[in-house]
Length: 83
Image (cartoon, rainbow, N blue to C red; front, side):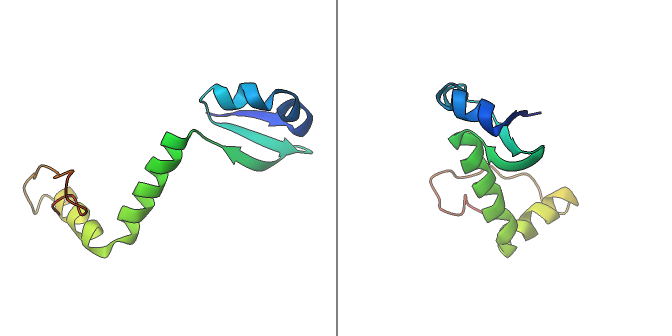
């Protein structure tokens, strides 16, 4: 769960909020307008979207979920993780 701050609160304490390393939402008139998250969370989100957008990777994930393939260790040195 992320904290929500109105524009005035966020403006007054933005450096502190950014240093906290937590996700937060900035709202304007009780409507969310900005979501801020740590860089690690953003990078993980982008990696997930890359996997979801790669048909070969999704085929491997779906096959593993269905139990059609056995477990294989990921090769972190390989661009495609050895999939």
